[in-house]
Amino acid sequence: MIDERQQERASLYALELLEGAEHAQFETDLAQDRELQSLVGVLRNASAALAHCANPARPPAGLKDRILASIDEAAEVAAEANPVIRPPLSSFRQFIPWAAAACFALIATWFGLRAMTARSETDALRNLNRLGEITLQSSRQQLEAERIVTQHLRNESAREFAAATANLEQARALLGAREQQLAEVRTQLANRDQLVTEREQLLAAARREVRARESEVTALVNRVDALTGASADVGRQLGGANLRIAQLTNALKTQGDLAEFKITTLASLLKNSPQALAVAVWDPAKQEGVLKIEKLPALAADQDYQLWIVDPQYPNPVDGGVFTVEPASGAARFQFKSKQPVAAVNAFAVTLERKGGVPKAEGPFVLLGK
Amino acid sequence: MPSSLSCCLDGLSGAVLVHKAGAPQSAPEWMSAPVSSPSPEDRQRIDAQLLQRVAQRDRHALAELYDRFSGPLYGAALQIVRDPTEAQDVVHDTFVSLWEKAATFETTRGSAFAWAVTLTRNRAIDRVRMRRRRAELLEAAAPGDFGYDESGPGNSGDAAARGEEARAVRAAVAGLPAEQRRALELAFFGGLTQEEIARQLAAPLGTVKARIRRGLLKLRDTLAPRS
Image (cartoon, rainbow over all chains, first blue to last red; front, side, top):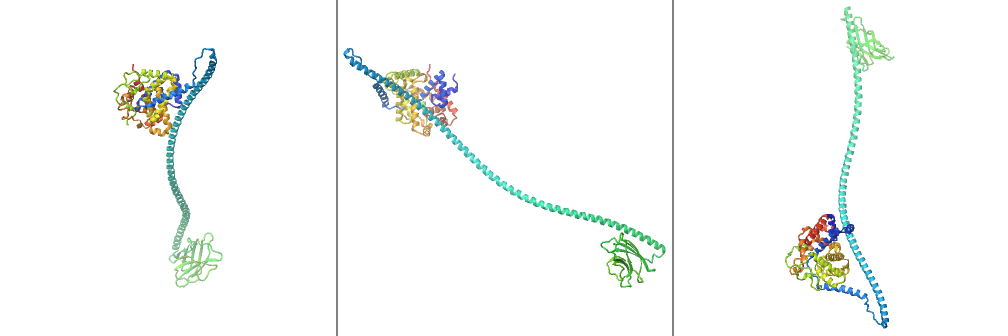
């Protein structure tokens, strides 16, 4: 049973369409398969019948004669190469001519054999020539097939190259666009970096300012605390002084003379000692008094505090005397007398004077009370 | 334009032509009026016997083979080479080869007619390939160029000269599907390779091979002797 593939190869072989290795393989199969040989035979007959489908055409009348003349000419050439052997003579006298003829025949035979040999060689050469033609034809067909395949591959390669070139151009254009975008992004990043740097500088300045403000606030808080503490002390001192005044007032009242006494509280005029305080009690009858002082600044060695009594009848305050205070507490109790008779007391004042005092106030006022 | 093989569509009625054995000096068969219709096996047997006589250097046998074969051989050669002078040379060379190589003929490899057609076709294709470049051949081998000329000499007054075998073949080919007929036509007359036929038909190579196989097998079955 011959399968379809072998039938196909047999059909192509019958039409001489098999080439190269396929042709050689099929001939090998053909030599070993009688059934395949039979199929090839009938397929050859069928394919040969296609010749009847050519446009009908009459061969020229002289063609047959030309063919027959060609083979006759070939036959004559062959006949010329064959010697004519004559029958031998019977008489002895004719021996010599027969001998000559025999020699001639031998020579002719030799030439004939040479001619046959030459003809065989010619046939062999013709066969070789035919084989060469077939080989050449096969090679041409193979070369043509390879040329067609190569051309096809070349065309395919050219198309692929064109496509690759187009893709490359697109990729380059895309790359250019991306590079441009990248440059823009880099510019934006640089601008943002600069902005960030400026913001950081502003932030650092703001932080420094905040720290300075914090320091100021801390100092202010400390100062407020200090002032609060000082105010509390002053309050306590005022409370104590008022209590003392009340006690003294009560004591004077008990003595019956309190209505005649002039009691005055002197306040500090010093910026560096605002808490300084003094209370003066004047007895007009005795023309003397007592001054109670607290928290006056300590005096230098060449200075004294001097008390002045302001009486409207005199153009200048009346000298009340000089006194000093305890350096540590700034406190003192000074009992004084006026240098001149005092009728009415409008105010008491304390000034800072040179050691021993002066007849007329020269130094700065330290305390004043009306 | 109708194809060459489409000629088989023309009428099959009319006188029945036959191969004739013997009568070496008789007129060509395709020109004679037949009186009987031998079977295909008889025709092949007679052809083989004539070829055996040719192998024995019988020029009369060669003359008779010429009368039996020259019509289709010349028509096929002319169809391929497209030149009457070259077609004559092809047929001349074919019969000289038959004269010289008749002794090598083997009936198992096909009929005598098939052998003669093969010799003719090979020589014709060789001449075309030598004469033209391959591209020119491909151009000339366009399917349209194989059209059968309805107005040719064989269509009008020579119907009786084509012979019964030619009629049978044409009828068988006409019965093939068009694509099989086209593939066989390009393969036989075009001298094209398988790949070239596939390109001409714009069909895959495997399809073309299958068409050739089916067409040739169907032709074989149609032309097979009826028992």
